[in-house]
Amino acid sequence: MQSVGATVIGAGVIGLACARVLARQGIETVVLERHGVCASETSARNSEVIHAGFHYPTGSLKARCCVVGRRRLYEFCNTHGVSHRRCGKLVVATSAQQEEQLLLLQRQGHDNGVDDLRLLSASAACALEPELACTAALLSPSTGIIDSHALTLALLGDAERAGAVLALRSPLRRGSIEDKGIVLESGGTQSLRFRSSIVINAAGLWAPEVAAALAGFPPALIPANFHAKGNYFALARRAPFSRLVYPLPEAAGLGVHLTLDLGGQARFGPDVEWLPDPTPGQPIGEFDYRVDPARASTFVTAIRRYWPALPDDALLPAYAGVRPKISGRSAPAGDFVVQGPAEHGIPGLINLFGIESPGLTSCLAIAEHVLAELQGG
Image (cartoon, rainbow, N blue to C red; front, top):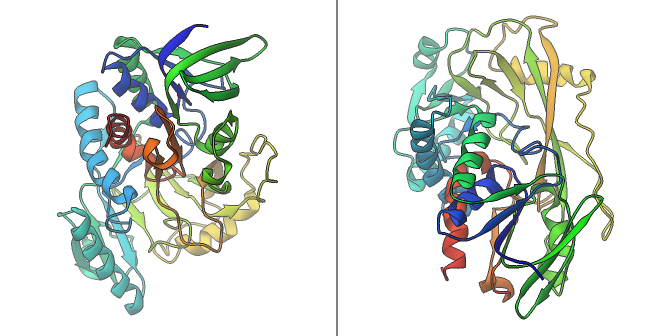
């Protein structure tokens, strides 16, 4: 049976970052991708924001990977010619009660190592963004935006230059955990069976299914699989803002915020639309990424709290993404899960569960963390 040093399942930005770091260690690495292109799911259907790292609980893996990942990502963009802009972000309060939440966010950011946050009065915030409405705001200068497609290509290029091989249209069919490694069967119309000493499950939305497909893996260690769709609407005119504008965070997300692409086009989202829970033991199938135009009315209400001058009929359905969640709608948001041999006792296997936002920002830091887990911590 053919053997390879490492197999990464999933060619999103997390999987490609992991393949890059493994190949650069001199490990023969294969990346399996079920689609015909890389990074067509969560990695491509998001806000393309480089987060600073103050939104996440202190000590969490999300907070640690975001703060380190943000620094790594800016360095990577600069050295690899990936288009990005450090445009900054304003998190706005629209009442006295929300101002207290801003203070808590600022303190949490300080504890997380985000040292450039500034609390602004309403007048100071409006001096930066004249069409903004707020009672106070938190300025994050280190927040930015990125071309996620260019990032994908740069990560893939680095991985391939180091010797990694990408196999498109190669879904994982099944696998088994054996004494001499993990045997995998992959492929479309024709399957290939091979042995791998290292397996990184970076399948995103399908990561729990991939773990369940490995015979011999303890089912009790596979987290529940929930999904929250996030819809986006585009602004049908040029935005009067030069920075990102966020409301206070809401359950399961960061609220309907205003983001900008590198061309200056504004979009709003994502909202949180919980999808039906999948039937245990059944494949989750494909997702419907269409945006219902009727959701625009809810967006208008949310946006006008911080931008009262939003014109009527200015929103156009844009795109949607799906968050891979490991906690349901009534539970607190889950942390990233990097599950390695210390948790399941299987040498060479790393499962990445619940890698939603800020996964894009954290991709390089998560890859470093995966390498450290494989090296024994």
